[in-house]
Length: 223
Image (cartoon, rainbow, N blue to C red; front, side, top):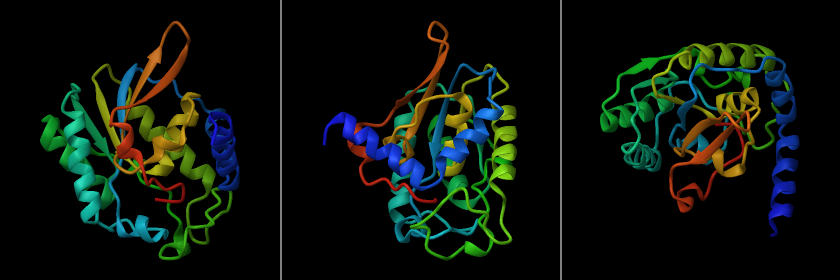
């Protein structure tokens, strides 16, 4: 597959899962954080990820996810992380604890970094996830984007190097709110991403801290 065909395939997946609408809503309220450098880490794998189902808040990391979290923490050791803000959903909190133990930074719970609540869909297959759909007894896409942006804005209102630990949904909101380019490898479980603002180009760049082979096997459905 050529680079162009891979890019087109990825864009097709974004449209299929309704992420163009997430982009549109996020871009209406662009974020301009005080921080000019920070790290984002999606949680490690759970059985819900492996089975591709909408997940409850208390589902823990599975054995693979625990190993991923420890490995991600090792990669973060070379970065001067001063504070960690994490979703208080169990899978994200466990991942944040692994990072905190390695980098020696305090962890603060930030409920606004939680994954979108899918209501009555929890426990069912997420294979055909479309972010545009409103889940019965769940969180609307507009509500999800607004509260996620508020949590990100407050967490990054600092000059201290911050690590955000959250989920796939908040990652989409973050990237689209900054106007950055989202690549498929960015959404891998437990892949630390370095966000840096390029003053000369007036844009955000995203770098993958982990070696490329670590991002193999990622999933594009709900986490």
